[in-house]
Length: 109
Image (cartoon, rainbow, N blue to C red; front, side, top):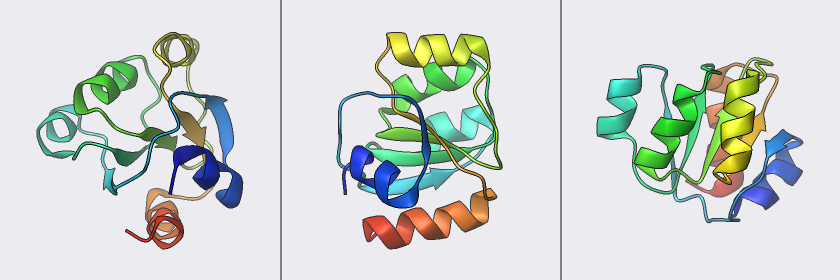
C-alpha cells in the first residue's frame, strides 16, 4: 500500500507530504542510533519523537513515511524540514503498539 492510501484509510493527520511510495514494512523506535542501524528501507517508521533529528534520520534510512503516535505533533523545525525534504509525516492518536497493528493490517505486512 502506498503512503497516501494508508493515510486516507487510517484517518491519519497529514502534516507533510512526499513521494507517494509503497510501504514495504515497518519499524518502531525512538532511539535514533538503533533506527539508523536497523530500520529497513521503505518502512513506515512509528515513533513519538517530534524534533528535527527525526527528519535527518528518515532521510538516512530512506523510510516511506514517519508516523507520529499518541497524538504527538511535530515541532516547528521538524515540520519545516519534512516539508522542505518532501518527507511524509503523519499523525495518529493511538499508542505505537495499536498503530503498528493498524499499519500492519492495512498494508499487509
